[in-house]
Length: 261
Image 1 (cartoon, rainbow, N blue to C red):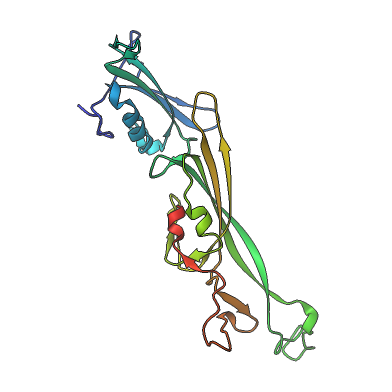
Image 2 (image 1 turned 30 degrees about the vertical axis):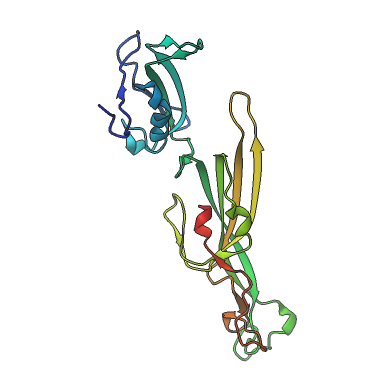
């Protein structure tokens, strides 16, 4: 019978030649984190599918902890040698290790972290009717540097173990979101044209015992107005039009930034 979180025909194993209670095992650590491990058996040919299924759910025995899979090890049992001298196992014993520090898996079993950081920008204020100290005071000078402070967000996304980076990383550069942009796991949504795709970084790692993969960093900037509006002192955020053509000037092309998430 398949375990509840997987379509693979698999079952948890309470012990392997040792004491009962070998699986599951759970630990609380001095830094406040939580980890657990469990043993699951499945047909040898389904072992990789089982690991992928496990990466998509919280630790099954205590999902409220939000512990996620961060490592899996596989060993075979009940097999024979084939004609080429390779071992052909019938069953796999899969050890699944979970932690509350594990990264969050997304579609395709890539791993990702999301980060929000605030920032503040100053925009000049029209000083035509401004006076120092009181309404009858001295007029505020042109060079007084009176600014309205507007807060925004830096929204950074880092993908790990990406086998083939999306071409959208290049083709969508410098665009803004044409439609509402939804974060992966933060539960936030950003209105159209308020998120600008400003930068990206890719690095490739080749490890002994593993294939090459990429780490992909993508940087967005959110502000409360459209990236095709500009600050007009005294009026706030406004569009800019071309006098000759009569059309609005588009500084950042609206594109489907959701392709990057």
